[in-house]
Image (tube, rainbow, N blue to C red; front, side, top):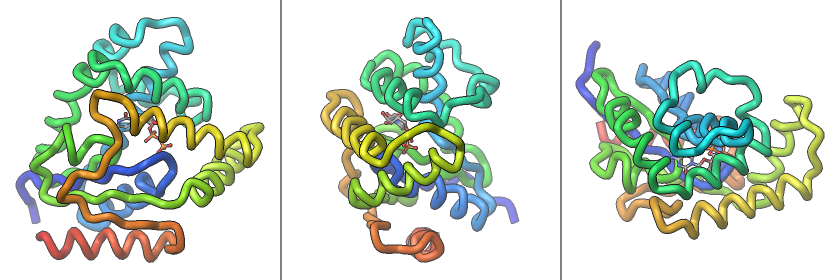
Length: 204
Ligand code: CDP
C-alpha cells in the first residue's frame, strides 16, 4: 500500500532513546527514517578536522554521513557547538524538509523537528528520560563500541550538551506545544516502542 507524505517528528535530549524508537517506528510503518543528529555530527567532525562549519554544512553530502567515528563523544560535543550557528542550521533545513515530505512517510529524529523543521508534522513525539538514565545508556553504548569513557564523564557530557542545546537562541531544544511526551526512564525498549506506535496509530 502506498501512502502520501506523513511526517513523524521525534525530538528530545541526548540519548533519550529517539534513535531506537525512530528506527522501530519507521520499520513498523514502512516509513523512511532520517537521524538528523547525524547531519550535525558530520559537520562537527569536519570542523574537528579543520573545516569551516558553515562551508561544511553547505557542502554536506550523503557520503559524509557514512564517515566513521560520528558516534563518538568528541564528535557529539562538536556537533552541539556547530548546531548553535544559525547559518549551519539554515544550510541543513531544505534537505530535512524535503525528506520529511517524501511519498510513503518519514520519521525524523532530532531537537527541532516538531518546532522548526516540520511544525505541521502529523505526529510529534518528545522523548525524554532522566539525565542519569540517559548517561547510563550512552555509557553502555560507547563502551560496547570500544570507547575509553567513564560514567561520570559521559554524564557530564550529556548535561553540558543538553544545556547548550536548550539555551541556544536558534531552534533550542524544547517540546512543541502539541507534542506527546514519552518518558522512557522506567520503560523497557519494547514498551517505549509500543507507546510511540500507539500514538502514531491513533493519528492515522
Ligand atoms: O544521539 P544523541 O541524542 O546523543 O545526539 P544526536 O541526536 O546525534 O545530536 C548531536 C547534536 O546535534 C545535539 O547535541 C544537538 O546539538 C545537535 N542537533 C540539533 O541541534 N538539531 C537536530 N535536529 C539534531 C541534532
